Image (cartoon, rainbow, N blue to C red; front, side, top):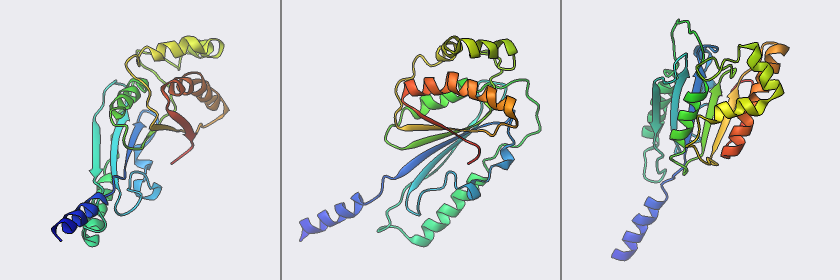
Length: 225
């Protein structure tokens, strides 16, 4: 009887789900108004169900290479051993914290450092390969930093004629980054006109897609969440 009791408890404990998803949101506030993000409405960051867990990381892109990183977390819970009302209350508080993540300021920025903050975040996320991970990069990809200036027409011409040369510049920042096959990168951007669309596609197809492919990262583009 004692053995059966121990086995029963072990069985219940093993039912605790290890269903935690990591969501990383990187917002280019030099180009995008973070106040437009509605986490609750867009369903970003909330657990898949009442008992699953979620880790949400939030950071911004400005004219510097390193910005504050905020992380919110709700652990998974065992449906058999947990109180439903308490869990619902815990989830409600988590969603309130999510909505308060948004960056608000009226600063003007002299540039956009996009690539280095992204690579730093990918390097951090690569440390945990046990959880499905999605990175949302909300940006037009118009790097304007010490790395490169895509507002320089000469750089865009080089990207058109010799994308490998520009790609090499970006690759120089990821020498220690290895395969990250558990991770997806979703670029969120809606070009305003045909010209902007053309430049965006040049950068995406000439730099981001081939490098992410080499790293084993699935990359896609959406106009919105």
